[in-house]
Length: 292
Length: 156
Image (cartoon, rainbow over all chains, first blue to last red):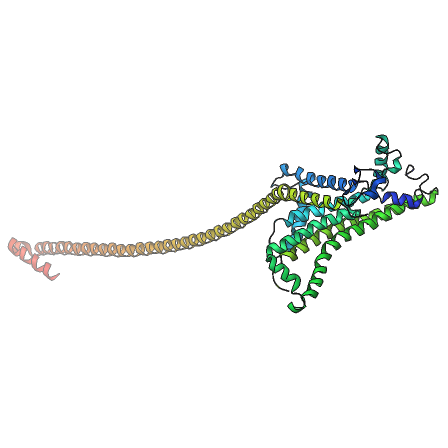
């Protein structure tokens, strides 16, 4: 905290926490220089979000794959219990939503979404200054930046709309893929144009159904992003209290941080669960063949 | 928080992780769980079967037991009736025998009595004749004597 305060104003402190470490393509070539961010177009990567996202994905795969060689059909114990509990929970949800159609991709995808998103959300519970400060010190020590405050590092991947919308995009592609696969291109187009008003109102139908279709990935991605961004924001504001010189405000901040963290555990799990359920529901809708 | 290629990177990561989970994580765990489920179901079914066969055995045992009991009762009854028959037979036989013995005894006695009577008659005749001879002297010869004897015997 001490290193992050100093001459920084509150606004700068917050801004610092909300800025990603970006590597991207500028007219002069690829760079990770923060001063060049404005010149980067679409081809820029939030290295911190993406790095943590991939790292946590590996944690997920590792955790679940690690137990596999030791799996037994006897009474499970230890990690196998945990793994089976997760899988059973996901499977129950999938089967309760996917009543008619069968698709063996949905289960693994739902499991990945649940655990991965939960792990990404869980990074929110790491006190907001720890990892950015560490990253700043490392960057300064290795000479990547002159001042540790110039190093930006945003830890929680799900507070980055790119991450949440990226996953929503994959779900969206799958929705369209399965819609066409199950109903045929004709069936899919019919679904988009012939409801709810019949064939003489095709343009209106297309607009309505189009919005309906597009709203799925957008709401899926933005819901997760919004919840986590707001939570992160409150953590940052609470952490800001600790940068004041008053001890009483500092203590209040510690108390508030504890309370918010406890409450936030609920939100983290809930948002991961909602993301999973909506993914399953959207794909189940893509598999539905009967007319409305 | 502008949208940039991070989005595509995350989409790619998503696809890769889902694929890994789909191919390498989900199937072995689900297989193990299904196998265990099957084993438990089999075990339960076997337990139910054992229960059924126990019940069946109990039933068969009861049946066998009842049959044996009935048989034993029958045998007992037969034995009883046979015993009583034997006793009856024996009694009857004994009665017949006793009667026989009785009748033969009485016959013998009758015979003896008759014999004794005959002898007595003979003796008495002789005695009478002797006495008569003594009274009458030698008037009666041996032929007369014999004749008188016969007469007396017939009269007695």
